[in-house]
Structure formats: structure tokens, C-alpha cells
Length: 167
Image (cartoon, rainbow, N blue to C red; front, side, top):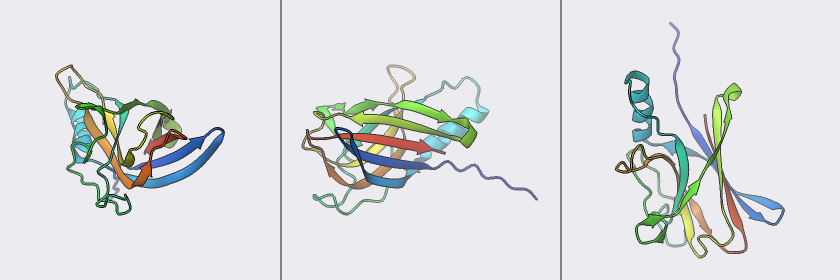
């Protein structure tokens, strides 16, 4: 008997960027949520389903159980949003467009983006998520993958570079 299992998994790396310097802050696996798995499977057997490509990164401040950002909450497969999404202003989330770098030979794609020097200053970032785009103005984006991590206090002195690989 031959068995083959399709298991998507991801890995998030976050770097602090100062001038030409690049320091790895976090590198860890992440959780692909149940809604994303359902969307992938549904697209395999249902015709007429529009594609929802991963196109944005969102960040938040609710990924830890303590205010200092030391003790990380476990991510849940049932999550449909970040625990406490960071917002530019009320109701408007920080959204960072992603660049996809496909690597079909190795069955992976890496999404990259940056939070630049002056953005999010003072926030203690403790969670990040990949989101799939809207299929209409009336449909919300859906979360694909989430990672809770120790706190990174964002400063104007550095930018953050995110590299998120899905295999």
C-alpha cells in the first residue's frame, strides 16, 4: 500500500534591519488555520470558486499572555483573525503588501514584506498573519496562516523584514 500525505507547513523569519545590517530576531514554524485548509481542499473539487491569493501581512499585539511579550499564546487552528490586530486608526488595520517568490522545484513559495522605519512605532508586536485577498468588495479577507511570537517593540530606528515560507 502506498500512502502520500499532503501537509502544508510554514516558517516565519523576522529580521531587524538597520542600515546595511540584518539581524535575525525570530525563526519558527507557524500554524496554517483550518479555514485555509478548507479553502485549499474546496478549490480542488468545486468548479467556479474564485482564487484568493495570499497578498497581505497583518500584525498584532495579542500574541502573548503577558504585557511584556515574553510568554507566547498557542495559535489555534480555529482562528479567523489576529488576537488583537494593530490598527493605523480605528477599524483600519496595518496591512503590508506581500511579494511572492515561488520556488516550484522545491515545492514552496516565500512571501516577503517590510515594516519600514516610521511605521508602527511604539507597538509591541507579538503576532503576525498571512491573509488571502478579497474576492469582492463585500467579502472579508481570510486568514491563511498565523504565528504568535515574543514581543518586538517597533522603533523608528529600524525596519522589520518578514520572510514567510509555505511548503
